Amino acid sequence: MKYFITLALLWLIIGNGFAAAEIPTVELTIKDHRFNPSELELPANQKVKLVVHNHDNTPEEFESYDLNREKIVTAGGKITLFVGPLTPGEYKFFGEFNPESAQGKIIVR
Image 1: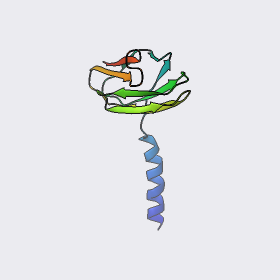
Image 2: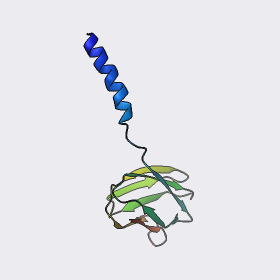
Image 3: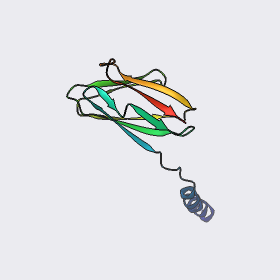
Image 4: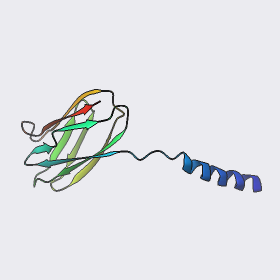
């Protein structure tokens, strides 16, 4: 029994040393049916947390075929998406409810 308690304590101590690094967070806002910023730069080969805030009084749907993401952002609400790790390139996104104005892209370097 002592062996298992010692092993459990050792695992807890060592496990904390191997904790994953915090995932970087990028903020995106929707205002007047436009994304701001309309271009985001993200690091290659790294997972990123994308938080989208909707400052409009109507809902919008964050849509990206390139990222395989689709999520409704309620009026005055926010959503959180995780993207990546991504390879270098450009990934387009748009607002499905206002595709003519709500457009943007992620540039991965």
